[in-house]
Length: 623
Image (tube, one colour):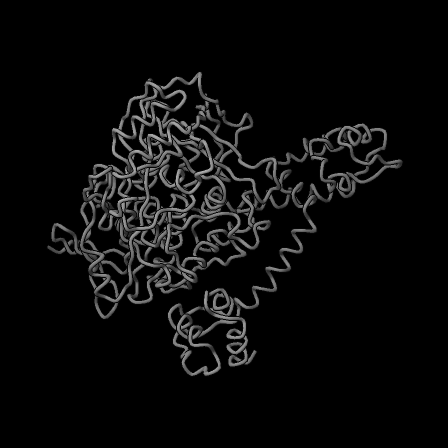
């Protein structure tokens, strides 16, 4: 049966990647169809009901700065907010929010339904319709043919998903939901390479059966923050998380069940996430540690269900409950549902262009866990970029690409398409060369104009950005101009164990000292009056302080980024024949021909391509 409507962009999958892709393409003007096996589970938080964290918080703010919706939805569903790493430098500050799982889903669903360019359809996609190596639509399990100018696959863990719980396994893409079959075989037949990965989830607990008096309380920040630059939400009655620990006794119980663990018996072939290992992995890899930290996290404001962060497992249910009841505070705990592991298909992302369009099939895009990533934020930012580029391709406009010095999103995509991954990829601040430039506080300064020029970020957002920039610049000018008397500032300097002064100095000079904070300068009546009169925002104050305190480092990093960007500007034709370069190593030729880098800069980051190979390539191209 042919579907009567035809679409610009068809999105397969309603997870975090699919939601951002649908919102981006539709907001830009494309007619979008979002297909999901179950429209009741759009934007489901399959694992931890939390957003942000180290590097992930930066990604979420970048999505927001460009005009995406994940940050706004997060703020509307937050039940606890914390800024991590506040004791370190600003490059490490990372916002994190505990969310109400059901409210998060509801807000995303409402967001998409309010967009008149988005249609919805419930079915499972069996294959992609093709014509002359181009995607022209999809065929569903129910035999419906739906035509579209482009197709974005955001299948998550559903492609041939296999759930493992102890010695049992069954097909599924998520607990209680069927796997998706058919697409993998078609893609393999078309020439795509594929692999298997695994991820896991902890047991969910009955909060009424936990003795919180035996655990450590972890409260939210008193000074509440958020992710979105344009919406601020005060969280009423923040919910606390709690910390407890495993023990050697717990480890012994778990080890007794290893012979029934699908991971240790070899039934799971796919590689799991290195940086979010199962409790079984932790016991083996860190055998010298007598205990591991666990976080007791609420699933929402109106439920007693608890997520036990740090206890991901696929051991038999009876082993899980026996081990849990050896943990402090969980002696009488009851399970809502056991933890499990899931194995699924992915396609190495070196088969993609920088736009996330596949190299083999035109107008077909991949984003999210199909590309080997793990995490809501990593999936969401890929969905945003794929949605933008699918729209741009349909209307025959320039592709949208972020570089490694633009955003963590640029780092993530470049890592994937250039280096590939054979284990679930997770973003860390250490992956970025320019992390001092890619801070969570300045994502709007870096990206909002790009989003506004695209048509994704609206005028309200752009106006607020310009106000912040103006206020920051004016505040820095004032601090450079305004003096303060020694008798006023020396009291502060002594408290901070910083050198006192004998004559009046500019306020600017004190803020550049490492231990002096902006609030310390409020001893100056002139500064207080200026802030009140000019209505300087908290964001502008924070920005000015960072620029003054870290100015020298920021300039050096910006200069380094500028130098390396020159290599990004030297483009390589996509049909370039590397075999004619006789002086390049055989491995270098193979890798260059496989990846087809878009620039010399990208070529230089390919594993197996040596500096001498790059020099020969530069000479050949007249550089």
